[in-house]
Image (cartoon, rainbow, N blue to C red):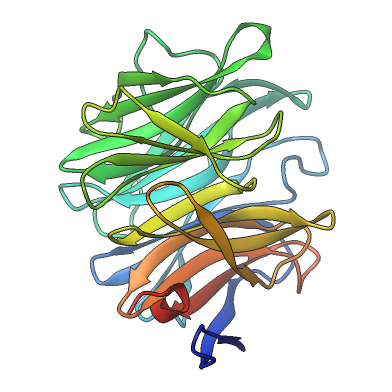
Length: 334
């Protein structure tokens, strides 16, 4: 475990810890998510030879799920694969009937060419035994051959998620979906964004509005912050000040948001955390120890700390999984 020191606005020293919880450089471990379920903590990530392909040119990434009672000692509870699929970006959530749910991207490669994307879902009733990955069924009006329901958030018994879908002329479109069983999803609205919009996190603000943090990879590449009141069809959108890859955010109180993702400083990728408000104004707060292929944080509030899972290869040639435990007062939350 490494201890880092910050100074707050009152010149007080604030310590936070970062610990490597999985990985020794043998496997490429990446794309994290973290959740609390039935009194234990769970982190999910992709594990494989490399970012996409192995030495034979195949792409069949696996999903590793690790668990801990206290966030210090972690053990593997699942290693999940599906023949012919590169399973990626496993995102954890807890269903209304108290099951652990893992939403997964399912990329299909043939001769190193991406020929399709079919999102998958995995369930566990106890956090020890997990179902086989099964296809998520998106609304037939918008479903395509390349769909990625990147993350879902449960709210008042309904799962909401944004999928990006490849259309004609290699144009990608964003769609907001909702469902109640984690498998079948109906279209809610089309999100009109340019600049190759893709990875999107859905959360809910204190006043009940839905908020989206949308990654963009073309044009000025600045992320989009979007908000809407129910029924989530009329959107207010604004650009953030920077680009965040693998974006996530957590609402910690009225007008108090912490976001994070991959940013770039002097050409080098790094994992950066931001403080923000419901108007979409985000200010850089902390750069976590990170280098090379890194980022894709997950957030969990635990008592008076914010736990942040992420991956990085600043200590190993292939990236490992890390957990930062940061006092909430670092972010101005008492």
